[in-house]
Length: 332
Ligand code: F6P
Image 1 (cartoon, rainbow, N blue to C red):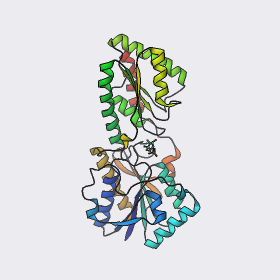
Image 2: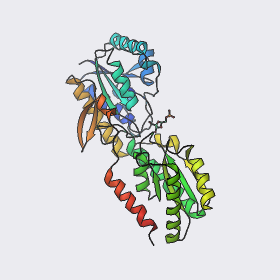
Image 3: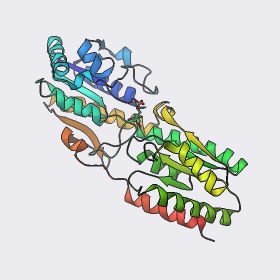
Image 4: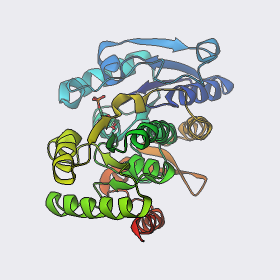
């Protein structure tokens, strides 16, 4: 193998740079040239690439974002878009393309495989952790840390003013960040898409829980973690409803893209490094159409289609712990 290419696509995630570094250094070890495409699949279509050498990946392991930039590319989903990308990869003599991104990026990779004969290997990079076949995705651990740290800070002001706070976290349609950040920050309540039933009952249950917690603790501060895209109308509407029905001041806080930034925590750097190095190893062995992930601390490979075929489940034990903690919080 002589030439491989690499891109980052979709929502950026802390640890993408660590993964780029691992891919480049491992490939150079085998005397394989690495070409980095800028702006995800856009760069493949527009031929935005540059050769990546060891000096390009110096001092990046600790940086958030991605030195290759990222994008969501609608043009690439068309037949013409993928054909142009295939032509460009062939013109450069690329034998394998490594894609760091989430499930949309892997669907893009699968689409490209209909038009390009080279090898394609995926690396799971998203804060949402919503990719089946891998226990964790690159960026997920840092996002939990950021959300937890922010909720800790919100707790200070919630306590001072005895207010209810609703903290909206990212996750797209999955509750991984929400569940883990809520448990780690000892939030009083969490709303997750995997467990959500209906709005009216949820409000009634929360109000009863707030009353129980208030009776037990003697104050009205209360933190609810809410996953984005869950509450109809968003957390601001829910805050207003809780405010009017409980009589306690209630404030919404949307953490937003702050969860995508920052220096990756050690777990993300290590995951990114292991997966990046392994992706090059398996590219050399001729693998294609797969994602490299991690399961029970072992590196695994998973066909692209399996990464989105089923909804990845939250840790049931953590849910049980969370529910019993919430129950204990309000007992007299
Ligand atoms: O997939 C990562 C993610 O940050 C999601 O958590 C969020 O729903 C989405 O991307 C936001 O996308 P954008 O940056 O395009 O607004």
